[in-house]
Image 1 (cartoon, one colour):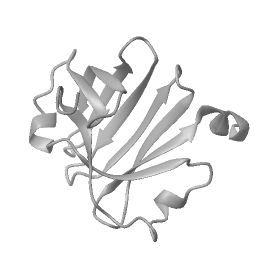
Image 2 (cartoon, one colour):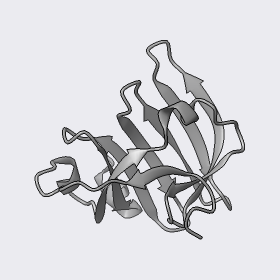
Image 3 (cartoon, helix red, strand yellow):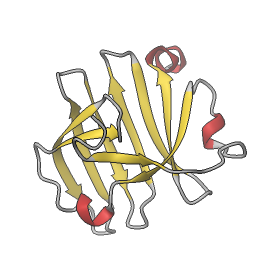
Length: 134
């Protein structure tokens, strides 16, 4: 399956041992990632299917893209098969923030920019957030 469809993220070699974002409470997995080519991001059309991470089984379907004057892009997705939804905001510098709720798997994927020059994909159990909402 690897390479069968474009991916939003690709794994990037980075030492996350000193990365504050990778050590957040509740995170069960942290992966250093780089974003899909920013030039290509601007060409994505609603309905485009992307793997969340190259070789990952989570497939996102783009619903809409919102552009800000600052050059920031917000992309809104649903998970293929009706399993959830999410959004990704990408700055003109390539740093990203995201929250993707996969209801079927019971996980929440978050993307955060780091001081290491990469982004980090964090995976949380969904119940972590429901316990901390008050």
